[in-house]
Length: 171
Image (cartoon, rainbow, N blue to C red; front, side, top):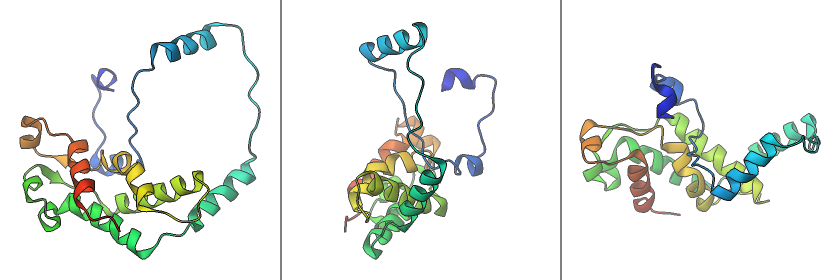
């Protein structure tokens, strides 16, 4: 949040890369904000109930790790991430001057793990390219660093990531 960053220093890229996702959260709609207001300023509501035990949560995490990812989907993920580092090789030569440096191998790992979690939440035992696409922007937006030229042209990392997803062939 830019307002909160005044007087602080940005994290080094190596630390930013350790965040699996960067989810952009917008302001709530007026009705949602009204509900927030009522919950936070009204009488205490119902006490939260435990919905899952710690053991069940750990078991679910283990199940997610076992979700199948086909070799073609793995190759798709590698192609997406390497396109952030060498866009010319992916047929995106016009992006080469806009990317200072692309996503690290940690992004490849995060993209597959996010895809597995997405598949799990949809009660599937396998990852599809749609699972990867669903979370691709959240996994990559903070890992693609742009040049000053990109900034001058008002190109964002989201623009670059979308172009890559639109260009790389889906298996």
